[in-house]
Image (cartoon, rainbow, N blue to C red; front, side, top):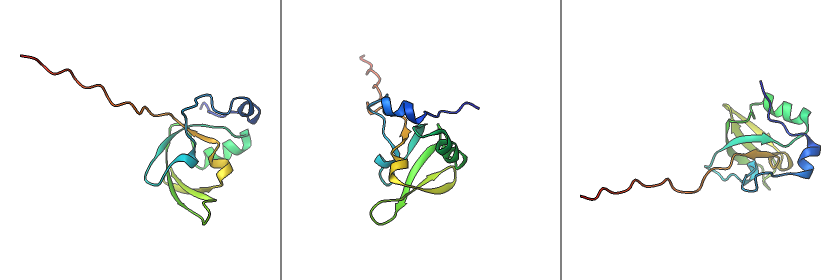
Length: 108
């Protein structure tokens, strides 16, 4: 199995190679996102992947503690609480915001 894990030293130099990408903390209630990568040290990333935070999986935000930290996320049928610092390092795939092209109207 191929793991999409960035080492911490790489993340410092290029924290967001895709400037339009969002992190988990940017998800609002009712939204969901697809995990793209974990910008964490190997041990931390491996532990989160054991909990279900795998690239390609959908993640939905849940409730949060007073003050917003930690925040609960639903992933792979489980609810997991993450601190703000950790959630900011879980990067979501960029989704296209452009509308789908419309079919040309037939002229008779």
